[in-house]
Length: 298
Ligand SMILES: [Zn+2]
Image (tube, rainbow, N blue to C red; front, side, top):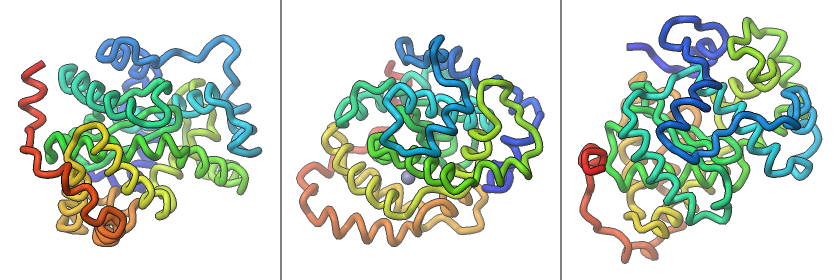
């Protein structure tokens, strides 16, 4: 079993040419995701879409200068970076289920009009990722270890990152610091063809291996819990996942990236407890629903 540590993640994106990673991420986005989620709006870039290098220039200016169309294009490129590291899982019924669940949750956000697209990555680790414009990915290893309310909590946490533009702001800060240029010096190879500029690949690699600011994570925890409750799920789904993370052995490779890129689970639980109090208790206590059962029902 491969360890998915930040180092290896970065290494895979940059240099891995093994069969598992040979999937063309742009085709995966436009192909499998379109099949499993008709109308997913994983559209190829439009004719007048900004060139990859223009996006980096935009990011170097200010987040306010990035309109929704360009935000989506930046997200599409970052999604390609993620899919260049880990392909989508082949279980189309599972992909459909996670898309339906995720889109229902996304409809309850202040940005329901985004082209929300959810995918399950074929990886045994316990991870979730978001990219600007409405892209959210969870790993198969995560899906296998949670029930529906817990998955809803995770998707709501990731959707909040999108709504609040956390990744866009972090990328912009990195671009302004000149990090892309520095990273390029150590770049081995861009295996994503012309779909993603070398700078965007370097920034994406750095972002997904180092994580967001802790304050962004706490905000997504708080808003994610409220969002999951608004969508009709037990608000204790996300806290339940955090309990699981808290008890995960720190040297368990399946949890390494999540633990390395987030504040300690105990602190996240304490912050949530302080924010939630008992206000959401009336929404809790719903029976646990196994994901395998849901997928079979469809
Ligand atoms: Zn997060």
